[in-house]
Amino acid sequence: MALINGKVLTREEILRRVGDISQLGGVRSFEYNDGPEKGVRAVEVNSGGGLSYTVLVDRGMDLASTFYKGVSLSWRSATGNLAPSFFEPAKLGWLRGFHGGLMNTCGLSYAGAPGIDKSTLLFLDEEEFGLHGRASYIPASNVYADGLWQGDDYLITVSGKVKEAVVFGDKLVLFRKIFTRLGEKSILIEDEVINEGWQDTPCMLLYHINVGYPILDEGSEYLVPVEKTVARDAQAADGEAEWNRFHAPQKEYFEKVYLHTPRTLADGNGAALLLNQTMELGFYAKFNTDALPYLTQWKMLGEGEYVLGIEPGNCFPLGRKAERGAGRLVVLKPGQSWKVRLELGVVDGTAEIAQFRKYMGLA
Image (cartoon, rainbow, N blue to C red; front, side, top):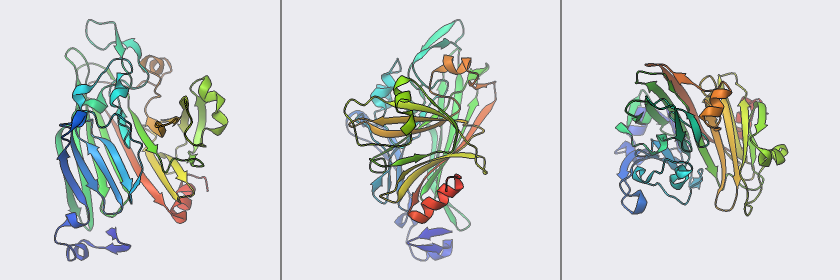
């Protein structure tokens, strides 16, 4: 059933009240037509429960602008939703099209800092890799966007596949399904990466979830049940005692990155919550820790770049060579797959905040 305007309604009760379901929520496909965004296909989703978000079909099926009751959840960068033809894969070129948005996919065969590692290309010993890989710049194919009744639930779905392939090398395919139920305020993501090639291939997945103002603000708090936290470098170590606290934007702020090992909760998930107590509003991420056992925190409190990165992954973003050396690198054999579940959503009001804190064991 769907919660519409404070009432729980059946399918029949809803359809008796509307001429078309789009009156309450659904999907709309469109294409950007101006500037460096021109030609980028996208899908806009309205949950009918106050949540709206944009799926960038031509940018790895990632999530761009996201709002809840008119309040922005995601940080947006100055680059806009750059068309994939502008991608600069070398070194830090990824940043020239890093639109922020609610989620960027880092992978599929590489994620993390630029570096040199063993090549999977035949006849090549080593290869240079740029920041965070190619997935976020690859247009999806076989895209489906629509809503469908399942009993009394109306399920809004966007799905498609993103293929990272090269002759003489890796052939990884990401099958992504994004769900939202009518009347709700959460996004469910189910991903499966399959090695469709004929050789063992590294699979690195990191979900770069970017939360910004106004939920992120002076006095906001980041709540994460963790087993262990490690500062990435000396700059992060300097502020480690306050890794979960935030201040106003600061001039020439240098990013602080923390590597968390999240605690697995009773339902098999890890969880993180950015809470703005003044607004009585929070944004959360839940993720299955069997597939995503690591959680990176990007604390960036600069002017304009004012953002919290909540980044569950099957690796830390230290580069493939470092992950291989630490024993964390996932390698898929031909035909093998890696399945991931994510839930992104909102807690609204003191009761929901208290309930989520209890779920995390932080009540």
